[in-house]
Image: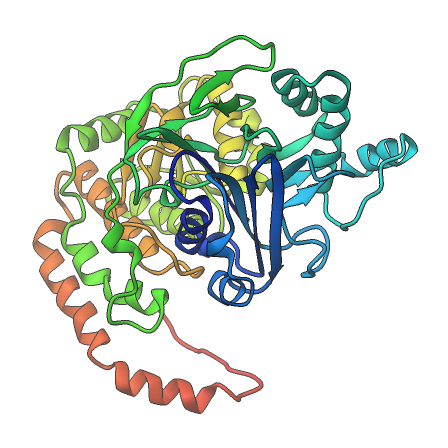
Length: 457
């Protein structure tokens, strides 16, 4: 997972990009790079390391220009090296790109482009995008046709933003998020609303295979047939204060300490939405829970308490194996998809397949404007704010709190969850009050070669 950002407007682009990348660094932090356009030339600075360190060593924030792109990387293809850091050029310095995702046919494209005379510098799959753009642009000088033809050649998942030497920035997506931020006299193109939330709360969520072009401070969106498409502007609501570490040394520690308040406000969202969610569950003949990683463990717990308290049978399936369940899904089925980001690729693919079979789609997300929320028949937000730490902490607690709220509604209050929340909040705070003892125990364990944890339910 990587973070990508583009900006064209009237602000000093380099400092804007550096600040944006710092806010999105949770998406990847093994290398960072920025490309800016100044006087018709593209300037690139990049290196291995975190945003603050690379910014300090290369003085990224002082690069000139009002248009540019930026990237933080979490390596997939190719090692953590300078040459593999983004942005990438083609054979010339007329186009630069940043990319998030996996290009599955990059080897075939790379061989084809080498045969045509292109020279590759990096070991990444992303670099083929820069060379494809360069190939098509050199023959026609038409950015719209160039991007469309390039996207038609790509197989896999991608979101990319490209900067052209004339000051145009453009991007496209397929199964990876890409969002436009609309500001006065300018636009952002970002993989996450956190990239532009300091500057605007007006977001435009691109659909799969949309192409966006920002030139002369005007934004155009097309499909791959070249037709103009309209996408609604959505107001996003996360508070920037939730991104700061505050008094804590690390984001993860801060997010652990936020859990009591998260439990306290669980289920306080729109009661009509919770009722709608529950009605779809009760009117389905087959119920499936799908998630990945930590969200899959939330699904496993949900399966247990649905059965025990609401007397509803459900199957919990890890999203990577959901395809083997397709024969059991029809228009009497309901799917509860759980994803903190609402952008988990396996979960989205599972949901889209189930939707084609007529299943009703329910989702539990942290981002109510995410791809998963937008394709759901009913979606509930855990509303715990951005989770910057890589390890799931408060989002897991928030998922379980909302799941218990739902099950309590389904069993007509048999859990008395609302009344028990005070006890849960107190118990969490009691655990957090033992932080000094926990730290001492951790110090004693950190050099152990093997740790055995034994317990019983």
